[in-house]
Image 1 (cartoon, helix red, strand yellow):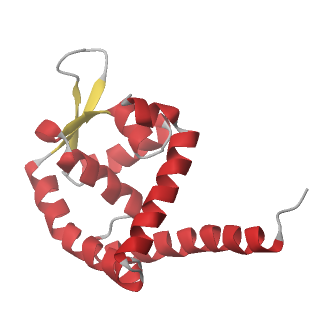
Image 2: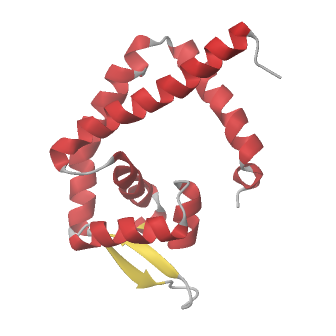
Amino acid sequence: MWLSEAEQASWRAVLRGTRLLEQSLDRALHAHDIQLSEYEILSMLSESESNRLRMSDLAAMVVQSRSRLTHTAKRLEQRGWVTREACLDDRRGVELVLTTEGLREIQEMSRIHVQSVHENILDIMTAEQFQALGDAMALVRDHLDPEETSGR
């Protein structure tokens, strides 16, 4: 079974557009010698209470395997941007904690990232189009990750 011509055109636009957007956002962060996936981790930490998250929860949030997140955390730790610590409420778990230096870096990088998001997606769509895109992707997310809507 094949997609219809219209479905195929839309599907290809989603795939290619998503990849091109990620590449462009990634390139914008290269001035800070950081990848988009690393930025996303720092951003999630900066938005969390106490600037810390359990590694297993963070892996689910950024859609990475635990082993990949561990490797990424090591790189960020070597830069002094995060530390890994035993969970405060469960000593068996590990939390990734944003350092003061990491917070300063993410605040500086966020200007570049936000500008890139504006240039590459927000400024080329109407507010309604962007809302519709977000709504559509939320449907996909909720279908593929039902725990997302249940609050984990």
